[in-house]
Length: 80
Image (cartoon, rainbow, N blue to C red; front, side, top):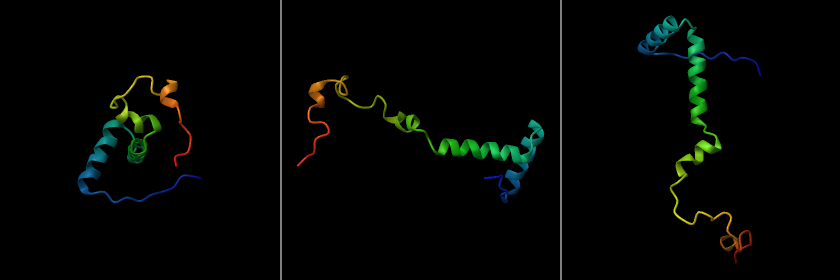
């Protein structure tokens, strides 16, 4: 898929801030918007590790839950 053009309407304040940032950093407005959108989309869709991060360390239980045979008995069998 090739590049795609998108037209976006910006309020005066955002347009002015974008123009100032482009001038200050010597980058095009388009480049700033592309980078910002790419970063936003990257954060909006976390990878598996980021998604599970909030659960790490918040559970109580035995430290060997996933390796001790006594806890694994019956794992994978169907319930009736």
